[in-house]
Length: 519
Image (tube, rainbow, N blue to C red; front, side, top):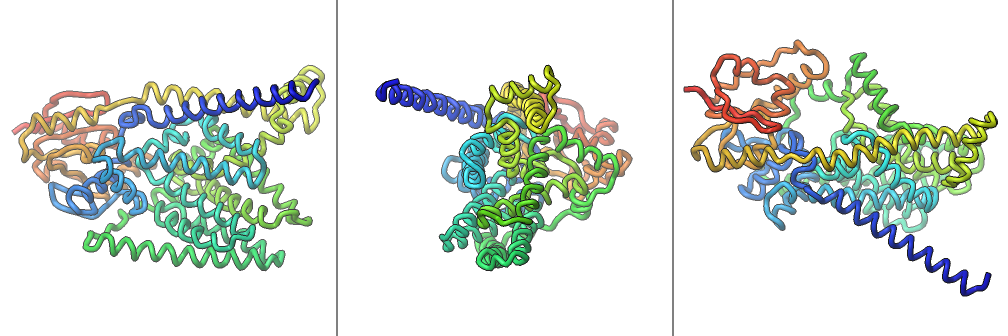
């Protein structure tokens, strides 16, 4: 073949890859931004955070409102999560898509960072495979990065700051020690952004620090120790900065019993459910973490070819492994609680599939599977190829289906319809009783809701003991209207008062039932 012909084929192949890449980016952008205000439907966890951001921007009050009176931030996400949302409100106005746009940006940045780390820890194909694992394999909408990123939650900001720290640590170990400073700042923010982060982040630094000390890798040990200490200082500085910015804000205190309910649950049924979720929804990542941990253990017993690379890999293994272990052994088993571990563990799943498929060689993988099934040649290579095919078939089919169905069937703007009714069809001094915090973010009327302790009682009733008593009187505030949505209906919070006939139904939407007080 002549040299010009070779160059032409290379140019043609490069052009095709570029076109495919642009189309894929456009598809992900569309999936991330289309119908942002209604897919998925605005829900309870987002409502508290968005309400605090709205009140801060419109009223100068960082916190919730109760019957028109200021109170603490309560069940809202932490300050590092609320602040960027408030900034978006300042720039683009107060609204659902404006609040959710922040999460989308964090999601894109987190995907870029995890691919960057995967390329440095493994290779470019593994980095591309990581994108495939994260975007094509999640078989639950509560574990899909795009759907989580489309919500005003704390997961994506925490992941972004964690990954920023690990990437800066990698570069600092490579010789640019000054990048340890932004790593400290990023980790300090991550620790304050999400309550689950601190223990697993500590493990992620203490594990490689212990190995570095045992192996006498003094340079790496010093940098890790400095990073750990500096991050803790940065976290305290974040508290001071928050105090200065929010001078006079009412302090928020955790609801009694919330940690025992969510982080230290020993109920057998919950434990079985927590075990099944990683095995069904995140099996490639769970296996990838286990295999990577075993490979690192074997490597540490020999001469490590790249100490700096292994330090960062151990850090990610410490974070994802300890997080996954806590989820299986102690957590309440809500799928969203394991999402950060599965996201950060994406490179390990990709590396596992890369090895099982002979460097993503599809024809060779098919031949190996045929050899095992038809020729009954069972060995490490053919068995690994079959495992890879099974994992990919099980996960990608469900993952693509979840993505497509979620974006086409989850759309719901009932909360906007309900808020518009109250803003246009009720008296300005009307009082609404509800447990649906997403309504509070949109409505321009007074509203009342149960204290945070009731939240703990309801979750205990929903997840641990259906007979848990809930001591709450919805009529104590003398409301004019009642709205029952997913949160109130799940815990049967308002069933007793509705049974008394104190309210009569007005109208129903796909997600909410609106009642008027009988006077």
